[in-house]
Image 1 (cartoon, helix red, strand yellow):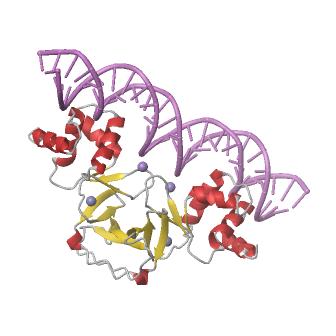
Image 2 (cartoon, helix red, strand yellow; image 1 turned 60 degrees about the vertical axis):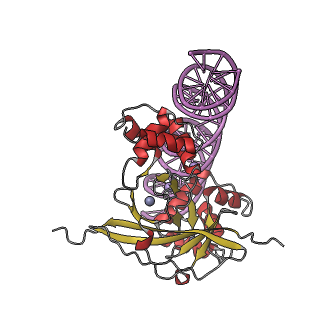
Image 3 (tube, chains in turn blue, purple, yellow, brown; image 1 turned 120 degrees about the horizontal axis):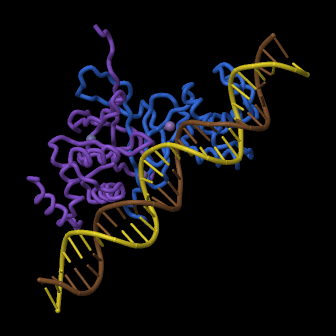
Amino acid sequence: MAYADQYIDKLRKSGIRPTKQRIKICEVLFDAEKTFHFTIKELVRIIENQANMKVSLATVYNTVHAFMKKGYLKEIPLNASQSYYDTNVTHHHHFFDEDENKLIDIHQDDVGEVIIKRTIPGKKIRSVEVIAKIVSDNQSQK
Amino acid sequence: MAYADQYIDKLRKSGIRPTKQRIKICEVLFDAEKTFHFTIKELVRIIENQANMKVSLATVYNTVHAFMKKGYLKEIPLNASQSYYDTNVTHHHHFFDEDENKLIDIHQDDVGEVIIKRTIPGKKIRSVEVIAKIVSDNQSQK
DNA sequence: TAGTAAATTATATTTATTCTAAACTGTTGA
DNA sequence: TCAACAGTTTAGAATAAATATAATTTACTA
Ligand SMILES: [Mn+2]
Ligand SMILES: [Mn+2]
Ligand SMILES: [Zn+2]
Ligand SMILES: [Zn+2]
């Protein structure tokens, strides 16, 4: 609850009304110090359990989309079956743990510059993202 | 039709029965000299128009999945709303043209080595893929 | 605090994908 | 050659993520 006022400000400044649903979603998403990667289903579950509040699925979708439009969340294309969202909106890369189906941030500084020696006429590059898929390294389960 | 026998062989050797639907799908996918990126919907449309044949949606899905399992196709995660598939199964990267919603191959040699200065204990990297989103470069529409 | 626009919600709809089960086809061995 | 059978195709049903709808509720403002 400590940050609720801060979120109310943030929402107001963004031209989004600070409803109790949106404040709760902010708390779930942004209280954590670390980057938070989630699917809609996971977010709903967290709100219901950890936050002990019922928010309709439609509102969760609406809020996530509103936050994306404001630049507070980013969608990560990973998997055709459902979208992943990311509270880290800086330019960065990812490991995707195929065992756990979890994203892990790779800070931009931890990836050497990605040099693309090819251009498409009339097009410019808008973003470059690296996804490294990882799996358990069962070399010698001693 | 020139390649039909070749596809019949390929399918037989893969332990997949060469049915007329599968041969037609092979022709659409593999006759082209260039890499072919497609969605299921696009593939169905091509089969019906260009190839002038009716193949059920279920068969198209089944065949694409069968070909993926055999390593003849690769799924490209791009967009949560539908899957993209790729006839280029070598290790390579992509431009994604956001204007046209089209993938463009970037040969592995056209991307400098991607150096990830970070490891996750107990995990090993299975693949590293780069996606560069591109848009029209309307710098001076003269 | 009333009026209004914005937001929430339950519910319906859409759409990609998968499943089902009946009909059909390719293969094989007698 | 062809019967038998497993594998395949198919229409249609089911599933599930995402979006739309429209009535109710809430937040803001005057
Ligand atoms: Mn899928
Ligand atoms: Mn979306
Ligand atoms: Zn991230
Ligand atoms: Zn490709």
